Length: 160
Length: 290
Image (cartoon, rainbow over the protein chains, first blue to last red):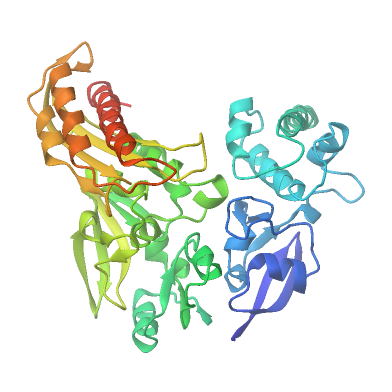
């Protein structure tokens, strides 16, 4: 199996690692870089638990070969808080009890961040479509949707 | 298995020629699940996304050139493209989640050759052409000639799709794509229907009807299109008997599979309904703009 030396940026820090050519970016993040926030749910791009931002765009890291990351700028759930302050989405999820087992949560947070970065004032329908690629099997979706709405309100307030 | 990221079409040709059985990919949204499901891994994975031509969308001289590896979300977010081809844009917007659409490409959706590929009927209805790297040159063929059966294409070993070309639609033209899925989102079509038609005032002058997911490949239904040509439009609605003929022709053209997601009888009936509804949307777009 060939291996490729990959240089990229993860959560603002320059990193490099050696990846098997057939491994996924998800495996490289979790294994080589020790960033275990993104989870493998299905491994086929259906569940969204492995969601990360690559160059600002929402992706399933299980559907990306690790060598593809060369030169890219990656954001995982570990990178969305501001030092000691949780991201407003994280804070709203905690207060709104929008998680139970937590497996889907890192991916949901990243997908919600991608939405709010592009659309700071989404409708409930827009939120539901934007999170359609993220499956939750325990909480149900209402608390997640309400927490995203709450975070959107707080982010808009902070931006004023 | 080795990963390679050529930056030119010629470099990709050479890799494929030197390593028979290798696979090109763009989003890998079908390729990775296939490998994980046990399909043999290719000797070289040729990533096409570092080749500028395959990632570029250009509109000039009344024609669009769409790089075959361009993420479909680049097109669905392109207001000019979506204004001209709302049906094709809708079809791409139905493929998986945002995560998938940031990776999935028209080239991949076509070359994967799923009978249920949503973009393919809409591309055929819009007479999209595929430009294929072949040997030392290129050949250009209609999209309808690429898929030959489930997972099977007319692409020879070493050939790959470089870009798509499509002419601006004539004035007073509209397209639409609808599909039926057993769920409400994130599912695979059991029937897809694309319609493009052109009007002159209150008369339909041209129409193309293409079905997906009801046969081994997408199927154009000439009888369904012909049923609309010459049909009168009254207050935005196409003459009912012409629509009945269209729906019957669409149902008759089906050669579907029978499975738990949809029986043959159901798929046949729904194909007529989807074609009729898509035609109703397309005529509104043709008369009023999007």
